[in-house]
Image 1 (cartoon, rainbow, N blue to C red):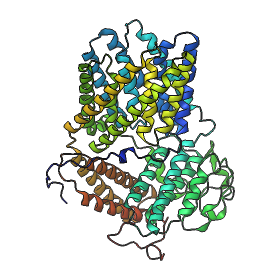
Image 2 (image 1 turned 30 degrees about the vertical axis):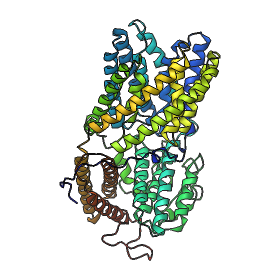
Image 3 (image 1 turned 120 degrees about the horizontal axis):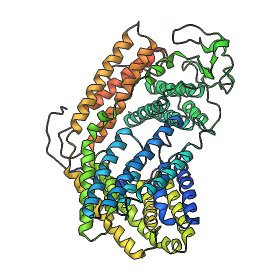
Length: 609
């Protein structure tokens, strides 16, 4: 039970078949797939028309930024895309300048490895992704081995910046049509996860996995809703109420109605009216906004039975004061803590980079060794071995192994696909551009099912890009790619094994301490009759975030090798205690009946809700 008890180092069983199992496609798989085609096509076709298709790799570097931030609200997406484009330009600038100053392959591989480590750490710390650092590393590593002069660098960077600006416009294009699309999707996922948790509870199963997944989905929904720190719109407030209903369902899953939760989730998707939830203890939860007395734009009056409307100070508002500057000022009590949370300053970037040191070291070591081995085997441009190694590193060794299996299988199948497509692509510039667009679409459409399936299209895409300056022998490209893939996967995984994350156990201990403190604070606030709704809401949200972080930290540590035993029993007990406290805080807000007033739910010590 104690984390201080050492155990002998042992190698866990590593999955092979399980790593290749296909999952369900992403709900919005078509969005990045269509976005990257829309971002790549115009610059490439324009260069083809001008007879300068050799410059297309630089515009494609900017166009690929359209793959990012599809899960972010548009106000946040605008900033994230801008930072991604700047990060891409920074890495590309370093690579182009390095390539113009030296042709020493060892130096270039070293620069590429350091860039890959920095890109991996920053993307993980800022949670930019998918596709996270892989695209940035692909762009910078490939540019290292393209002959350059210093005089060419500004022009090439300008092409990438122009394509990046176009990619930004493509990423923001859906905003006028579906201004709250990402928030709606996140809310629907939270409701679906809460419904699955409730179904598990009704079936008499323990459902620890379903409960953890539901809390993670709800936490992700809150992060999506709260990432925009300006004054929330009426639609966002309605979505916040729905997420609150998901939290209520998690507090008392046996009392929740899965059918109603799924019905709300279906209604939230698209552009239709957002259903009114009302008081979770009353039956009129399913009233539409029109039945609630509010028109779809948020204007109108509330019915007498909907409960009093209050400002943050608690004063009643009359119907004429419900609207001001297009925002609904009437908030139900359960939302008063949201404004306070929006005002919380995010943790500084440097504090989030510290725990990622082992992963960054793995990335640097694995990439540089993979590049050196590829050079020793005679490769002229070993960037693919470097990129393969960089793409492997996940939260722990077990996940890194799974990614290595997926990468190797996907790349080997991908080179066969390239061998079949190459004769068509070599018919002319237009055929080459169309094949590149098809591979871009296929990669993003399939990668959500499993990484290896997306790699089947990524591999021919990367090989086709190398042919933009001029066609090359297919046999040489295929042979070089297979060798570099095997070298990158093998050396990269060995580097992950060599650089052990011995801090994993300490991270779990710190996460346990955080959960304990957050639980004690939430319990004190819930027990204090004078606690304000805002204080209770802030304490509850802080505890929920700590529980989600504990589960993620424990799962990441469980996949590491060569470390002391993890306090698994303490983790489970801490989660159970936190879930009981979360249920108590929800009940304290009056959103659930007190224990004993319902025959279907009992709140007993030692049993998680």
